[in-house]
Length: 172
Image: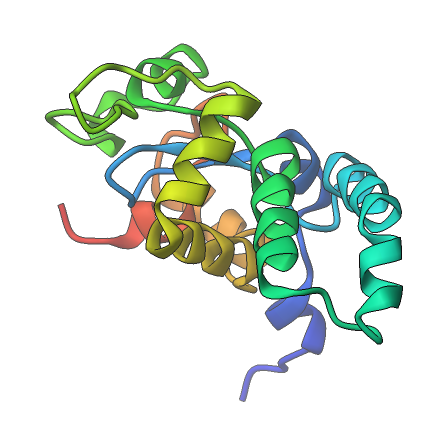
């Protein structure tokens, strides 16, 4: 019987978490950083300061609208740092791992939205279900799990920018 360690299950690839990883199993590829990364922790610290008074005034809870804005800012400024098929290709993600059609973030009229904090904030505020999906991915223990990423390296040619375990292991 093989020995199993808690480290096998929960150890995070800190380098990938810091550098970011392309999540390619959404309609639009997103480059995401681990919540434990310096980038995300710095944004979180800034947001904690920004919303401190509202948190204290609410007895330890933020009103829904402020909580929604805080999460959106964390995603827009910290967790997500880029998006779109063109950006993923430029970062070394193999075309075979990306959507065959589309793959760029667009507004309702089909106008392309390049990644900016402002565009990301607008998209995440306008689309709470998408915001929730992205937040769920960022909270998943699988996203930056070291053993899952090592398994990926053994199954494929590694791009310069890591891609999500779910994208690698999902059927073509």
